[in-house]
Amino acid sequence: MDTPIPPFAVQAGEGIVLETPTGGTAIIKADTRQTNGSLTVIELIIGPKQGPAVHTHHRDDELWVVLEGDFRFKTGGATLRASTGGMAFGPRGTPHAFQNVRDAPGRLLVVTTPSGLEGFFQDFAAQLRTGSVGPETLSEVGRAYGLEFVGPPVGVSDPL
Image 1 (cartoon, one colour):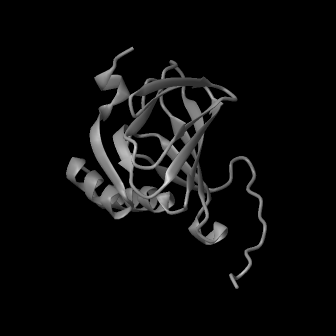
Image 2 (image 1 turned 30 degrees about the horizontal axis):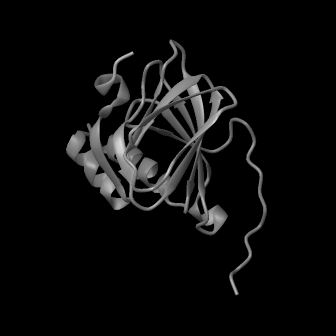
C-alpha cells in the first residue's frame, strides 16, 4: 500500500522562489515530495511580451491557468489564447510555448502531471548561481527532466 501523504495548503506569496530562463519568476507551490509524485504546481510571473522557447515535455502533460494577463499558447499546430481566468492544455510529446502578450507582467499557474518539473527550475537556478548560463546549459538541464528545446520563443517566431 502507498504511504499516505498529508493534505496541505500554500498561501499567496508562499513557495520556493526561483529565477526562470526568461528572467521571470517561478514559485514552486507543490512538488514531487508533497504530492507523492502525482503533480507539480508552479506559479510563473512572466514579463511583458516574454515566454519560453518552444519545447517538448517528454514525461509530463502541462496545464496553464491564467491568473493574471493575456497569453497566447503555441502548441502543436494550434495557436490558442487565454486571458485571466482562462486555461490551456499541452499534452506531453507536443512542442509548445507561450507568450505574455500584454505590456505588464502576467501570471500563470502551471500544473504538470506526473511531478518533477520543479527540478528543472531548481537546477537552472543553481546553474545561474555558478555563473552565466548559455543555451547548451539550458538544454542539458532540460534533458535531465525530459524537456527538449526545439525552437525560438513565440515572440521571435510569430511576432505580434
